[in-house]
Amino acid sequence: MQIAFEEARKADARGEVPIGACLILNGTVIAAAGNETRQTNDPTAHAEMLVIRRACVILNQERLVGADLYVTLEPCPMCAAAISFARIGRLYYGAQDAKGGAVESGPNYFRSAICHHAPEVYSGLSESESADMLRRFFSEKR
Amino acid sequence: MQIAFEEARKADARGEVPIGACLILNGTVIAAAGNETRQTNDPTAHAEMLVIRRACVILNQERLVGADLYVTLEPCPMCAAAISFARIGRLYYGAQDAKGGAVESGPNYFRSAICHHAPEVYSGLSESESADMLRRFFSEKR
Image (cartoon, rainbow over all chains, first blue to last red; front, side, top):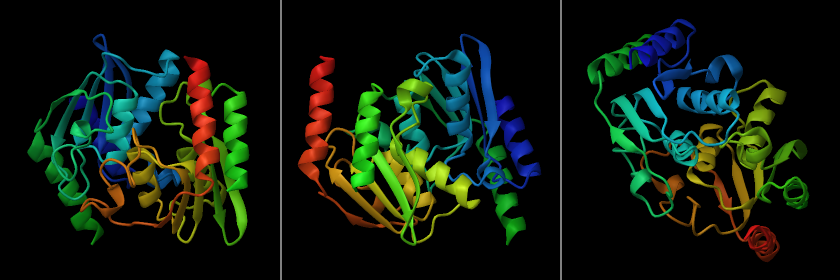
């Protein structure tokens, strides 16, 4: 989780929304990234999407069975579906995202009939650190 | 829509799930793609994601305001959220995807409280052509 936070801080320094993620398989960090939507003009470049895509390239496989994904904020529907498609084993996240999350906020994608693989979910890790970082970022933008 | 179907046929020929998409802005085709999940080992490489990402690169902008997205199958939650994030104006699709769709099947993402931009949606375009193509693909795999 500390690696995910470090990526969130680096995203913040680049002017990106401060969210970070890290993917671990068999105790090894495979990929870590922060949001890159602004610098790459890519609305799909959320931290989770980047670590999933990069880990698949690095491991040369389409599925990340048994992997642990750490992310500083509750995933949105796009990232939740990608987590499911990649068959990630465990999802750990920080703050809840009441406005855009799709795990405990909004429709719980992992419990919906159209979700065919759900990871184990552990939420609330370093929750206040994650929420504070985002609050600061958006208050500075206003 | 015919461009999207042509991309679906090309995906089929590559051994990919036969789904295609095409993005149009101001009457010009900006990007067209079929699924590439297998050839690139990327579980996020759905046709819609690829055309959104490529159109944003081509236009050098993070949002595709006023764009029309044509896709041969009802988008999944990942693609539906990406369509929303990219601020696409109109979504046209072929067959319904009862097992994985997030527009008229499963939770309707565009009508959920966590969706902050919904496109106009037109469904059922060349529905049987789209469904037949997918049925043939999966029956051949079995």
